[in-house]
Length: 183
Image (cartoon, rainbow, N blue to C red; front, top):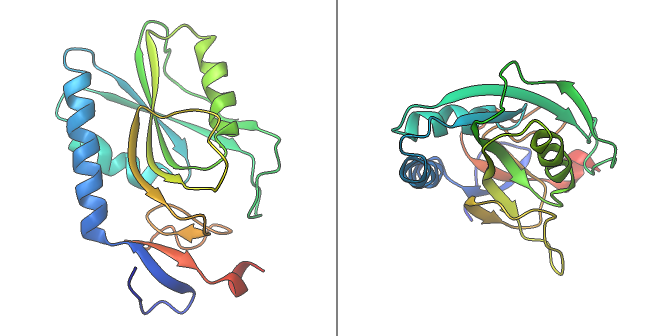
């Protein structure tokens, strides 16, 4: 981990170059797995929009994109446990191969709920491409993503789409937010 100049960031976990390498690797693997399948990449807004934009440019096979917004956090730092659909898909997914692009996976409970809801719409398949998976001691996420970009420490991280109270999404790297910012 390196330091940075942003006053609210304790240290950088992933540099811009590291992020580019992770996304390129994930895009190559998805391209290989979905050759001739025209997957629908579902972006979970808001955090995953930056990752998804880069990911679809790294995917070399035809694909489509649609957006969903779900909420379980509000402005806090921990999930409320109540999942609500804020914006549903515009695309029918029946018979489609679906890849859910997620920015960060911690408990996986929200994503588990989302997958269950989408499975009721009878897609051909549903997989998850998680840019990051938080390493939480003695806990495994409720779902196992097929595509994992990187494991990150159990810290409050922001940047590259990840936010705290709608701030820091525009940072080009992923960094640990100083505790005094969210305490």
